[in-house]
Length: 118
Image (tube, rainbow, N blue to C red; front, top):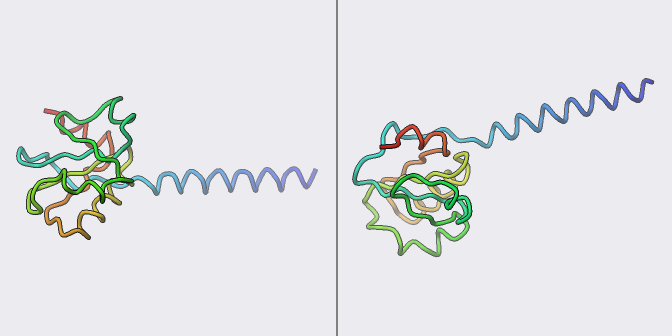
């Protein structure tokens, strides 16, 4: 009987840690609007992009972003990156900043971007 209670407590603790780690992966949006001159880049997979994407966004998955920098405009143009939760967008922002892009904002996740629909 004691072993079952112990196992149940361990399982509950694991569940709480799992939930906290998942919640910790989400990254808040850094934007309050989408400027007209900004390039919006969806860094999710092509399949995710096909399901829904911000109008006018281009799709460059974060895994191949560095190899596709030529698809981006000059390094001074505002760029907003977003993904499902904001985590991949955070990685994308780091890649762009390390490649000397100047005006990069993490748009966060889908829910964040939907707030800015035209």
